[in-house]
Figure 1: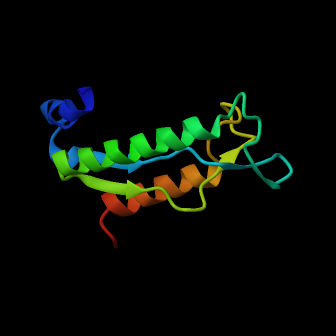
Figure 2: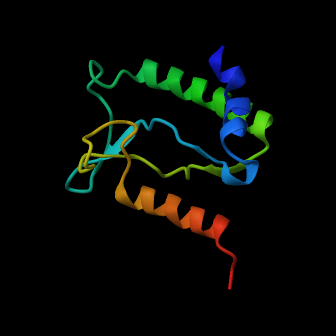
Length: 115
C-alpha cells in the first residue's frame, strides 16, 4: 500500500524536525448555530459506518507514520466536534473555531520556547 512508503517520502522532502503529525478524526456530534449539540443523523449524507471505518483507517495510518518517522505528534482533544457554522459547511471533519484555535495554541507551545 502507498501509506507504507509515505513516511520515507516525507523524509525525502522534509527534515524530521520539520514534521508534526496532527491526529485528526471524523466526529459523531456537531454544534448547531444556536450552540446546541446534536449527533450526525442524516445517514444518507453522514454515514456513521463509513466514518467509523475511516477513523479506524486513520488511526492505523497515524500509528504507522509515527513508527516510520518518530516525529512530533499532536493529538486531537476529546471534545472536538463538527460545527454547523463552519465556513466549509457541516461535516464530521469540519470543526468548531475553538477547536482550530486549540491546535494553533498547541503548535505554538510545541514550537516556541517558553519564556
